[in-house]
Structure formats: C-alpha cells, structure tokens
Length: 293
Picture 1: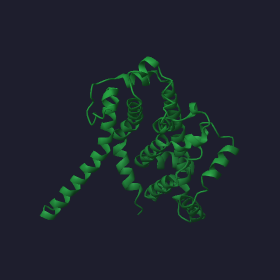
Picture 2: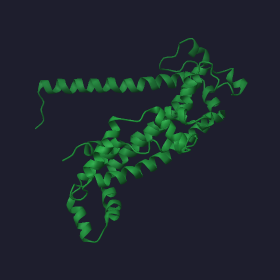
Picture 3: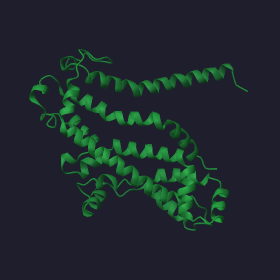
C-alpha cells in the first residue's frame, strides 16, 4: 500500500526541495564558469557576467586550441587515469577476493583485514611519502602519480562485501567441477560483480582525474604536470606566468579570467560525460556493496 498521508506528502515535498537545492548548488557554478568562458574579456572584467554570456566570444577556446601546455597536461591526465584505473582495479580485486573468504577458508583473513583498516586511520605523512617516491626513483615520472595511490582500502572493503553476498553454492559447484580459485574469480565473481566493478572504476577514474597535489610535489618539471595540477598553478598564480606564452595578438583580445574559466570547463567535461553512462551500475553497486548480510 502507498502511504498518501499529509505527513508523507510533506516529507516527499521537502525531500524534493532539498534535492533541487543540492542540484542547483552543483550546476550553477558550472553555468557561471561557462558563461565567463564565452564572454568578452571587457564584460568579464566589468563584472557583468552572471549565468549568461555577455558579448559572446569564442576567443578563449581559440586560445586553448593553440595552447600546447594545456593539451600536454590533458595527455598526462589521460595516461594517468588509464594506468591508474587498470592497476587500481587489478590490485583491488586481488585483495578483495581472499578477504571475502571465511576464516575456515583463509585463516589469516582477520589479520589482513585489520592491517588494511589501520592504514585508513594512520598514514606515514607527506615527508616519508615523498622520501619513498624519491628513493624508489619514481620522482618526476608518471608512476609517481599512479603507484602511491594504486589501491584504496575503502574500495577493497566495498568489493569484498559484495563478494561475500555471492551465493556460496555457486563457488562450491565450481569447485566440484574442478575449477580453481583463479578460474572462479575470473569466470564467476567478476561476471557477477559488474555493478560494483563499474562503481569502483568510476571512483578510481574520478580520483585520478581530480588529483592535483601529488602532481605538484612529485613532478619537478611543469611539462609533466597532470591537468588538475596545471590548472591549479594558473588559477593561484597571480602574475599568470603560465599563460603569457600564448600568441600575443590573441592574448590582447582575451583575459586571464576567461582563459582560466574555459580551461576549467573543458577539464570537467570528461567526468561529466562518464556519470550518465555509469549511473545505472553506480547506484546499484553502492547499494549492494555497502551492505553486508
């Protein structure tokens, strides 16, 4: 039966109102950034731009097309996301599978589970992490952006909880048919875990795409910066030393604010396109993987 009482309708109305507010708080800043990127520099400087372009201009995007530094940083980020997602998912799956077993099947399960959980509560700190990257010769390479964050304990626990919900009868029948753990993991567990796998892929991709701090501390050459590190540099650098290498004639018709806004908007587009296609798996994976029977 459907509850149609007054209290229920008020609750649903308040929920809908709050979701609208939260949605607008996410959308409005992006609309404002887009409007600035499509406005003339004089209108932006005068503070006339709100949520609609003033004196429409594409000069900032014309600048970006000619800016090799931006596209080089974009390439570094794409390489980082591809390598990071592949390595992260491989290690996460290999760690989650044994942790999903009972103590009868894996007697050291509790020890390794707590060993991983402790790393969520305590970390070595920035200086020891930098020294490890430096002494292992990862500094100023793409691997410095991938290896230190190769595995997320949260993702491991989420996936292991999902694995525990898979009926044990499926695994037992596979053992009877002669399958080993590798075959069971590849042919059964992964095939039945597509929702949570897709969810973790989104988590890993967004984490690598949005990370900027590690690029600044682990890269000595600005040409090796990933996109977010590059954007952070030009956004906080008041003398705009990064963007003054552009074509002089084009720079005379744009401002640093319109250029920054256009680069920020382009950097957000890949992630904005990922979520609509992964939403179905994302929601079901979070609901199932977060609950342990």
